[in-house]
Amino acid sequence: MAFKEIAVIGAGGIAGLASIFELLHVDNNGTSTIGKGRAQDPAFTKIVGFEQKGDVGGVWNVEGYKTDSELSSQDILDTEHYNDVNTLRPKHKLQPSFDKLINTSVDNWVETEKDESYLQWKGSAVYPRLYTNTPEFSLRYSTMEKANDRVKDLDPFLTHQALHQRLQTFADQNDLKQNIRFNSEVVKADKIDGKWRLLIRVEKDAKDYWYTEFFDAVIVSQGFFSVPFIPLIKGLSEYNKRYPGAILHSKSYRDPQRFKDKKVVILGGNISTIDIGQYLAPVAKEVIISRNTSKSAPAPWMDRCVQSFPNVSRIKEFLPDTKEIVLQSGHRLQNVDNVILATGYHVKSPIFDDDVLEYSIPSGQDSATSRSRARNNYLHTFNIEDPSIAFVGRLVVQAACRNAEAEAAAIAGVWSGYSKLPSKEEQYEWELQKIISAGGEEYFHWEDFYTVKETFYDVIKQYYPKDRPDPIGNELDDFKDYEYSLNSFERLFNDFKNGKIEVDHEF
Ligand SMILES: Cc1cc2nc3c(=O)[nH]c(=O)nc-3n(C[C@H](O)[C@H](O)[C@H](O)COP(=O)(O)OP(=O)(O)OC[C@H]3O[C@@H](n4cnc5c(N)ncnc54)[C@H](O)[C@@H]3O)c2cc1C
Image (tube, rainbow, N blue to C red; front, side, top):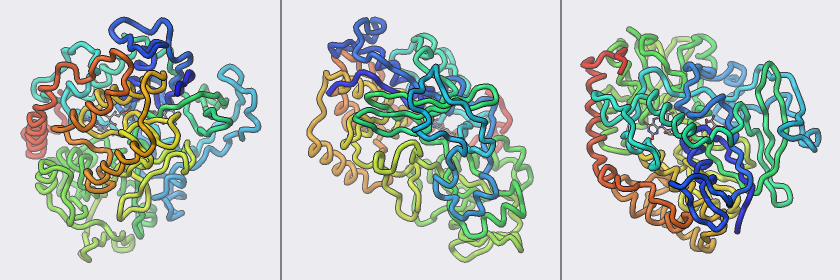
């Protein structure tokens, strides 16, 4: 198997940049040229990254901290199907059909007016003063020099600005932007006669421009923090109508001062809850966490952080008439000023038909969210049924840059024709064993930090191009010392929560 013309969908984030870099550094004979410059006789003859934002950075490119809709429009909430990704992110009303786009290209497009109601959800969830929750070495590609961008009081974490700067530096130093088309959203991807046909919408001036383009293979590196998951809750829509601004998704959280002296309920119980909770605690009147109290958080340190707030069961219903919130336990909460839905994100990309990229749905939910498993998946990366589509950025282990490198390297090795994937049966066997070892579907894409070298890096490396340097490099000791970052995270959490560090403190 060998592919020549590759599209990278979602090119500006950690995963997309790693993918473009990797593809540019493989010679036609399957040898990696990393450390020696770009491949002179490249394995891949066309590499195009599509990025809907105006620059690189992915979620770390905050674009002035612009928010999307805080919840979605009222007419969408009124459908009572707002938990469905296709309802929350409806099609662009003026999207031309494929028939109208025959013979179009990047230089020859079809123009339409903008659809002002189009909810693209491309704003970032990153807010002022957010710092990373994973250590600095995990957020540096192995080919990058160590940077002097660490802040003593945040060690080993980075400010979000520093991480964005790293991604800019990586893109600039390796001239990656010349392979990226910015302001270009991939709206649809389907397969015609063995080729991937992409429908692209370009935002320019006050118009939209549409064209199609064909590729042999596609990398999906769109990230998983874009379209918020809003759980279907009785009364939510009416409550929002009566008390606009009272309910918001954590994606639009920006400033703790908005919640000064307010009684706030955060629905969730995972990392966004902890992050936001630590800033609200010193300024809000009261912060309550509403969550599935029969389940613990994915790690003991997270549990300790969550349990340091008053915990109640999940929200069952909003009562607009009395401005009350009914909990699953039957108890009612009164005088709540704000509810923040830290309920995660949809993982399913509307670009692909459901049978192309299938997802399992977590138990107790009706939509595929960040905790869903991509089906037919080998090593978090390859699609077992169709090897011309692969993920970069799906694996969750706290080493975003290194994971992306490993995934992209394996794809480059296989797609250049140098490495061969095992039989479908063997790939499905890996998938089955992973479901078993992960204890089910929810944590399928998670690997344990302490064992990830053995369970993932040492397995996937057999598919790398020839001579591809190890993405962990000589920093395995840092990987093994993950305990240090967990302790630091908890220390910072407590310092913010207890007012030892001012919530408005700029690092
Ligand atoms: C608030 C927050 C805090 C986080 N903190 C951490 C942390 O501390 N450490 C950590 O490791 N991870 C953290 N994460 C996870 C974070 O997503 C990863 O760090 C990393 O940024 C993922 O990179 P990515 O390239 O996979 O996705 P993204 O950064 O989301 O990049 C995807 C890119 O694809 C583009 N795109 C999407 N759809 C399309 C389309 N249809 N057409 C064209 N372009 C498209 C997007 O515009 C975006 O630029 C955090 C996430 C959030 C939301």
